[in-house]
Image (cartoon, rainbow, N blue to C red; front, side, top):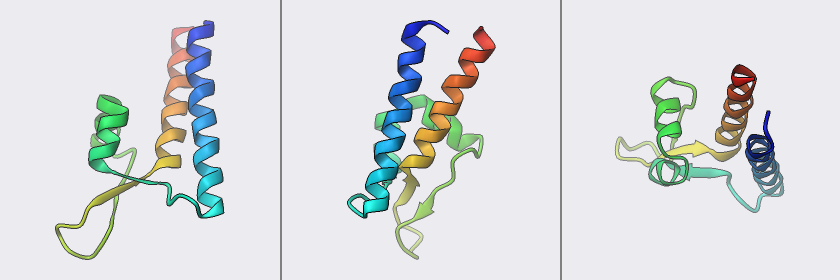
Length: 90
């Protein structure tokens, strides 16, 4: 594993830690809308949703309710994918 790739894994793990900390303190719901998630995480996020690896919940009971995703879950899956990719490339 080269230093650049290790940096990416560490950064994602740190983001996960911050998200979990904020969620536990109740300062942040730890949720992100689908539109925001696509903007932040791009094609990786879309692919994970299509594969069923990340599942949304809805902000209300209406069929027009906003899809929300759990940020710590996204970050944990992203870190896992990065580590797996590095192990495969090694």
